[in-house]
Length: 113
View 1 (cartoon, one colour):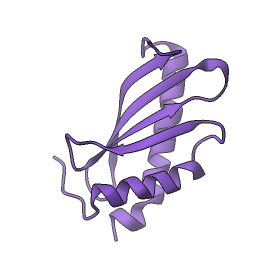
View 2 (view 1 turned 60 degrees about the vertical axis):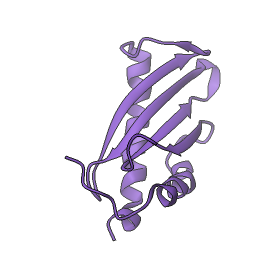
View 3 (view 1 turned 30 degrees about the horizontal axis):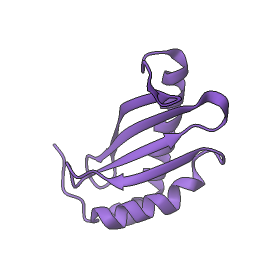
View 4 (view 1 turned 120 degrees about the vertical axis):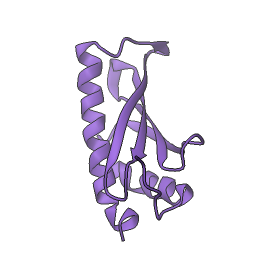
């Protein structure tokens, strides 16, 4: 069960926007926004660099002040829905999931003071 965070979503979104570039690949782009459905969640959208034309959407939910749960929500390739079970998508999803966890860990001074 989720425990409430000590950090409000607006502060969390700003911190993620500032810190995420430090952990993602230099040419990938991303957006971070608050999840209106859950005060403990953020929505992250990644555009993979290069000719892959993949974009992946994740929900990152703080289970408590230190731990996040990451869920792949949607995958598109060149603007069209893509099967999330292909090897290429699974590799990208795993890659971004690691980066999301790294970012969350780097923000523990904010979420777990």
